[in-house]
Image 1 (tube, rainbow, N blue to C red):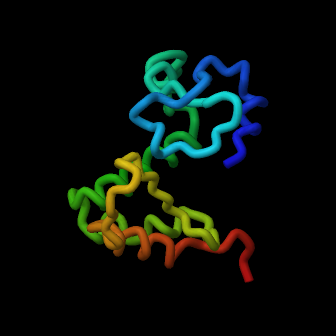
Image 2: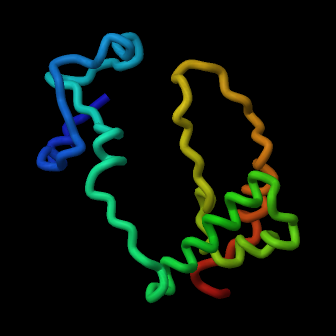
Length: 133
């Protein structure tokens, strides 16, 4: 794998590098080049956080509504009537509108289905196209 793209981010304080990956990752990281680059998640999450008040920011208010509605839908604390039109607030993308990241253990078998899969598929199915036909 090629990691030279990290060089453009070299001045960002959340990036670190070492001669090799930590011992716990050595069997999972292949061909990292001369240096092993990594993201300092702890530092990123605890420093330089600024939270803007959404009172005067309509876009931030809308993002809050979408995120909260989606979270409540997948947790099962919001009935279908409360989230069934959520996808209409999103622009349809071929790759889907909702992307989940997996912070699990690499190599561990993953389930092909998730409890909230139907919700994600429904939201994607009713998203609007960017340009009307």
